[in-house]
Amino acid sequence: MSRYGEFPAVRPRRLRATAAMRRMVAEHRPHPAELILPAFVREGISEPVPVSSMPGVVQHTVDTLRAAAVEAARAGVGGIMLFGVPEVKDAVGCAGTDPDGILQVALRAVRAEVGDDLVVMSDLCLDESTDHGHCGVLDERGGVDNDATLERYAEMAVVQAEAGAHVLGPSGMMDGQIGRVRQALDAAGHSDVALLAYTAKYASAFYGPFREAVNSQLKGDRKTYQQDPPNAREALRELALDVAEGADMVMVKPGLPYLDVLRRIADEAPVPVAAYQISGEYAMVEAAAEKGWIDRERAIDETLMSFRRAGADLVLTYWATEAARRMTRG
Ligand code: PBG
Image 1 (cartoon, rainbow, N blue to C red):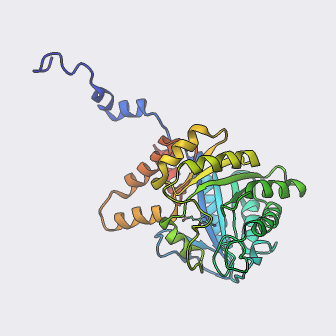
Image 2 (image 1 turned 180 degrees about the vertical axis):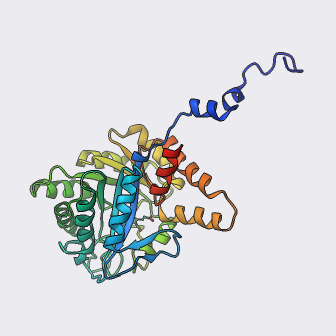
Image 3 (image 1 turned 45 degrees about the vertical axis):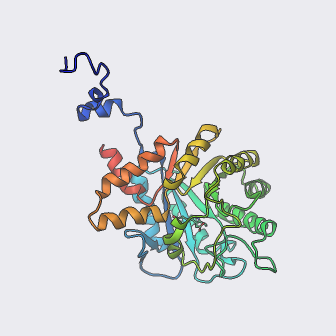
C-alpha cells in the first residue's frame, strides 16, 4: 500500500519494469524482411561517389551496387529499390527507355546476382533522366504534360520489366499512371510484374538531398503534380484510384512528417502499405548524430518503429541493411 492508501490501483509501470518484460509485451517486433533499401547507381563512374548531404550513402557503380544488394540480402532485407543516374539527360528522358540505360543495366546485374532471393524494384519516373529535372515531359508552355508522360512511363515499364524488375514503383504522381503502366505491362506479357504505387507523395522540402543523389537539374518545384502538404483527405482519393487501377502495394512519402496520412491509408488499404523514409529524414538524423546531439542508433530505430506503429507493413530506408542487422541481433 502506498502512503496515499490504495491509490494508484492501476500501475502501467509494472509492464515496463525489466528489459525482458518490455520485450515480452512489445506490440511490434520489427523484422528485416519488411525493409527495402533504396540505392543509387550512376553511369560512367569507376568508383562510388559519396552523396555529401547523405553521409554513408553513395552513388554506386554497377559492381558496388551488386555487392550492396548481396549484403542487403544476407542481412535479411526484403527488397532493394533502384534509382539510375544516367550520364546524359535530355528533354524526354531517353535514358529511361533505353534497354542499355544505366537503370536497366543495373537491374540485369542485380537480378543476375540475387535471383529471386531479394525483391528487386525500380523507380519508374523520368526526373533522373530529364535535363529539366521534372518527372514528366513538358508541354509547349513548360507545364508537365500528364498524358504524354503516361506514354513515356508505359515504355519505361516494359523496358524495366524486361531488364528483370520484380516490382515497379511509379513515382511521378501523374493521374492514371498505375492504370496505364499496368495495361502496358500486361500487353507486353509482363502480368507477373507487380506495382508499388506512390499513392500519397507530397511536394516536400525533405527531398533536398535526393536531388544531389540523382544529380537533378530541377529548377522550380513539383507542386503541380505532387500533393500539397495541407491535404490529407486527398490521399484517400489517390488510394482509391491506385487500388482501382491495379496497384499491388501503396506507399506514403515522406515518412515522419506524414505519419497521420500513413495511419489513414493503413486503416483503409486492402493491399500492403509502405512508408518511404526519405533523404531529408536520413540527413536530419545523421547530421544531429554527427554533432553528438542525439544517439544515432536509437534515433534510427525509433523512427523505423514509428512507421510500424502508424500502420506500415514495409519501410523504405537508406539504413535498411544496418537496421536489419540490429533487428536480427535483437
Ligand atoms: C522521383 C523521386 C524522388 C524521390 C524518390 N523518387 C524525388 C522527388 O520527387 O523529388 C525522393 C526520395 C528521397 O528523397 O529519398 N523519382
